[in-house]
Length: 301
Image 1 (cartoon, helix red, strand yellow):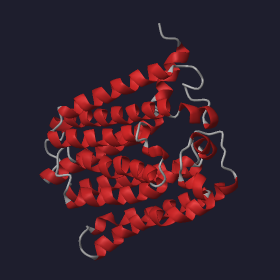
Image 2 (cartoon, helix red, strand yellow; image 1 turned 120 degrees about the vertical axis):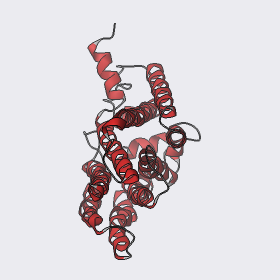
Image 3 (cartoon, one colour; image 1 turned 90 degrees about the vertical axis):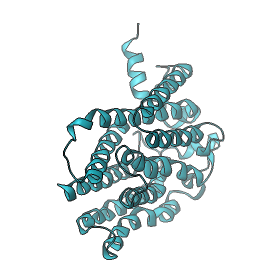
């Protein structure tokens, strides 16, 4: 029988907080995909089971990735995040590995019943998440570690949701996915601030432990606000509806992410799971994806 301690361990292993936003975002993008493809909200209730199944598939994939990352990062977590379930002894590495495998299998199995394109993009995301943590373990490779976060979570994360009902290579989904990709390409560095010393000791090269927090902040600064300014350029060129202009205001939190990183230059350690810069980066990405979806739906209704 599972004890309360072990149940807590399994729950923290999948990091539920990081699953909520992707679920909401994926559902919104799927609804936007449906309304844009059909030019109407009619029949939406009839496809709700598909939306729920697809979002569950993506949520399980995210949870599987979180579990796998903790399995392979156990030595690093002992240094920077000793409160996580494996370092604390709440669950074993083997148990966490089994959980990760089961979650991956469930995610892929559900994806098969959505459609072929959704299934194939889901498989591609699986490849990115696995190779990030396992050999060739791109998490340890400078620059590629940021790419391996931005591609599956930013670019592929949006087009896989859009593919449930629409063409993932259409102008709208590709625009949103590209903006999200470049933002996360810079913003993902915020997650490495907390792990700076642990990454050095375990052999992972990141911008933070290679160039320092201050220099890294300036290196990623253009990625934190330029993607949102691109929205205004597309509107000016007549390629994007003027309704999308409020999304350009996300340059403000983008700049604040940079500012919060810069403030942390002399205080890398933290007792919290993530830094304020990471939290704001995560919220900004959520607001962009959510806002883009809502505006796309509003255009139809």
